[in-house]
Image (cartoon, rainbow, N blue to C red):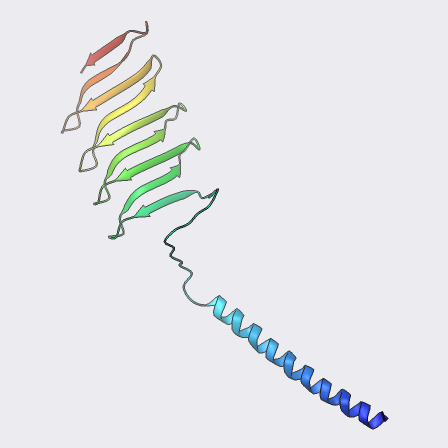
Length: 151
């Protein structure tokens, strides 16, 4: 093989490599441009995972109203609120400042009607009427006996 043939072969190879490199650069630019634009919302029918870590979860109905909310409270304990179709709360499960749990039941307007929790003596139930006044309290007294506290 002569020097001229070798040089001609190198020039052809150099031209092919230059074209390939240019095509790769254009392709990379196109991919980066497409990835950087557009909406970042993804919808899935099913998500399966062993562990999901998020700060807050909100589930909305078809009207965009929040019907389930899961979050961490002020004491970093879990809070779960279920709402009706109008977005008003129905049930709340939460951690109190004392570190104990509570269950709150709401009426169809979102007003608190029943609370189950603990106090210094043990379990405690508070019932409110339709105007929001406390009408009954049930719990334990300082001796461990059950007692109904009329209001």
